[in-house]
Image: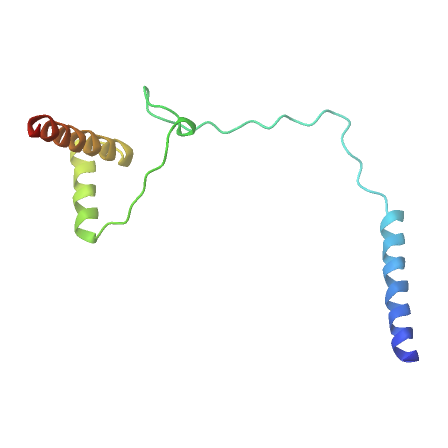
Length: 104
């Protein structure tokens, strides 16, 4: 038991010694000027498009064939992913809206 007490006492003494050394070492001098304000990086977007902050992300998992079709559409139509998805959703929406109108 005495050995355990000595180990604990030595441990605490070393901790106190390290704490005192940290307090004695001078910290590097801080520049006297005001800190620079944080500026958010702007997202480059095409003219007429919204920034990402105003948009909602939609994602999905597709098989290889669908991914290939998507890539071909992007290249042929010269659109980015978001534009292709948006156009596909608009077309699908119009198609189903028309079906609903004529179903009644």
